[in-house]
Amino acid sequence: MNDKSRNEEVQRHYATPRHLVTRGSFQAKYATVSWFGWLIDHMNLQTAMEVLDVGSGPAWIWRSQFDRLPDDLRLSLIDTSQGMIEEALANLATLEKIEVVSAKVADAVTLPHPDETFDAVLLFHVLYHVDDPRSALREARRVLRPGGQVFVSTNALENMSELHTIGAEAFGGSPVDPGAALFSLDDAAQVVGDLFGSVRRFDLSDTMTCTDPKDAVTLLLSMPPGIAAPEAQQRHLAELIRKESDRLQGTLKTTRRNGLIVGTKAP
Ligand SMILES: C[S@@+](CC[C@H](N)C(=O)[O-])C[C@H]1O[C@@H](n2cnc3c(N)ncnc32)[C@H](O)[C@@H]1O
Picture 1 (tube, rainbow, N blue to C red):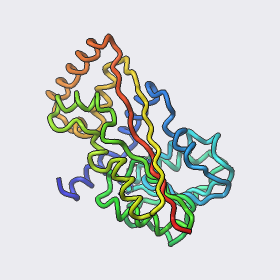
Picture 2: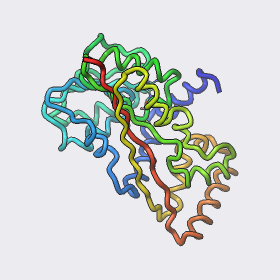
Picture 3: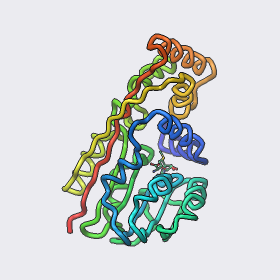
Picture 4: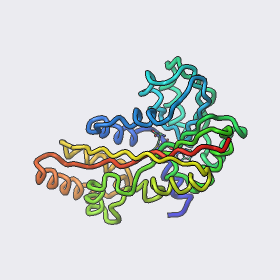
């Protein structure tokens, strides 16, 4: 697939938060660790910080972790999806501790902000959608103040390998997490290390026990390649998942493996 058709597919995928809602619901039901809480634990956000959230999606991290945020956070958002920006603004509208400085439709590789504007730049689960993640990280470095930090989250190659193995049997192709196949946690550590020098890595592993096989099917159909699978393959997937769930007496386990890479711009 060339860059243009890949970008069109990303635009379609994120025109609304629908697919993110499916994935978020699976985690809300089965995760034992709060992903957004875990991220906030590693960020040390301070009062009056200038923060840029790149590929913010619906801004769920801010709404869900509101009680744990410092006062007067000054937040800027960008996302390539107008629908996501609208959803994010609606979600942030009533959160008094946060001042939304700007919310724009823009691309991570051409940030519409001046040099040295932010104390923190977040790229959470977005770089696997960007044609050139290294350029996006150069942009993040440009808009950070000296001493500012970039926070990059993505999936490890083995993320939910138990489910992706069944997905590969139904759809063909590889059992590797589709996001990580494009930009994995190891890739993030490598590129942030190259561009920022100082880099820290935090890994999260959380085993989820799915007790309703329909949830696992819906999850795999909310992301590539399942999202574009013909009906026959979707039915095959549902059958394979049901059989595996029955074999495991209704306790289909899958382990979320993802993490956070933190880079600091030289003071
Ligand atoms: C998987 S969602 C992550 C949303 C949010 N960061 C989170 O972690 O909940 C990816 C988001 O990145 C946006 N996106 C995709 N490509 C982008 C790009 N090149 N520049 C900026 N945002 C992009 C999508 O529209 C979508 O909202």
